Image (tube, rainbow, N blue to C red):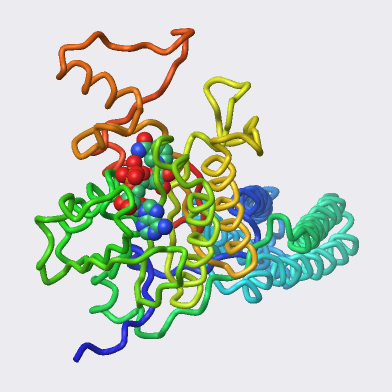
Length: 431
Ligand SMILES: NC(=O)c1ccc[n+]([C@@H]2O[C@H](COP(=O)([O-])OP(=O)(O)OC[C@H]3O[C@@H](n4cnc5c(N)ncnc54)[C@H](O)[C@@H]3O)[C@@H](O)[C@H]2O)c1
């Protein structure tokens, strides 16, 4: 018998700590810290070099003849070396969108010791200033120490101020997200890291079956398809039926599904207007209840989840081309609303589960996709043109004839957009 399936991460081979602030805020915050650390590095290095090189002729006294000045050089050198290490950590954090330590230690790492170093420089400079005063005839640069002390303290306080503003932004629950569900310790074992159990809802459909083909190419993947065959067909998957790494379940996503998986590709939903308008109540149930069920599953097993959304979330857009910051112009009571609004609610649920429960999510807003296994009767432009061409009929262009569409070939959609989306390091992504 197979042992129970532990929760496993995506393709990441290394686990990074994640902050509770949003990815963009974390990036901005880490960049600001990098600037502070760079300033601290330049400043302490310059001070140390200045002390080491500043002598007044061979017979005059040197810095190393005085304890206090030796202390100043040592304090600056320590801060310079440590700042260098911290800069490398910042660059790593920015590139990975992650934090080096769990959040509570991270605050200490970011700022606690900055304060300690500020006071180290302050005490060294106080000692230096005091000594410089007693050496009035020999040394007239005593003000330099005061300036350096002031800058050190300002940098320390600037760090603390940034920390406070970060904490304030954490209180903003619009952008904050919980940490992901705690994975099983087995997740990090070698065997489970390299093997992935993947659920694809709607996997018997057009895009879903191509996604199955793609994911089955990797022999470390086990693929489970759950489909009610409303618009999909077993025929699309016939080459995999009976394969030891493949399982096909007749299941309607409006009912809960209990399986142990690491990743969920949630595609189940009729995509063609002919089919989604055929039973609009069922369509909206599939989008809302189906997505809730899949998110519940993702939460229970700690799986990452991808939703295939649609360009139709923009409705009748007023901006061309649409970018992700455009929120759309959607009719909530029209005959297409079961699909448009259903997908919009599904996106909302994805983000709410992400913020409230820390689920790692991806959303792909797909535009017109075409290719083999498309349903010839689905009423969309590419299948219409091809069907008419095969029948030697004139191609119908709907009025006014000026409309534009973007098209993507299904293998590009699956290979570039979908199949790798759950394996990159981001906690949520909209594309
Ligand atoms: N094809 C496109 O151009 C396009 C564009 C935008 C978005 N999308 C999205 O991509 C996804 C897949 O689209 P497609 O073109 O492969 O459509 P499709 O109709 O070929 O596939 C959908 C699959 O979901 C299954 N399904 C429907 N309702 C279900 C339910 N309640 N429970 C279980 N299974 C159910 C169907 O049987 C079918 O196998 C959909 O979510 C769709 O909204 C597709």
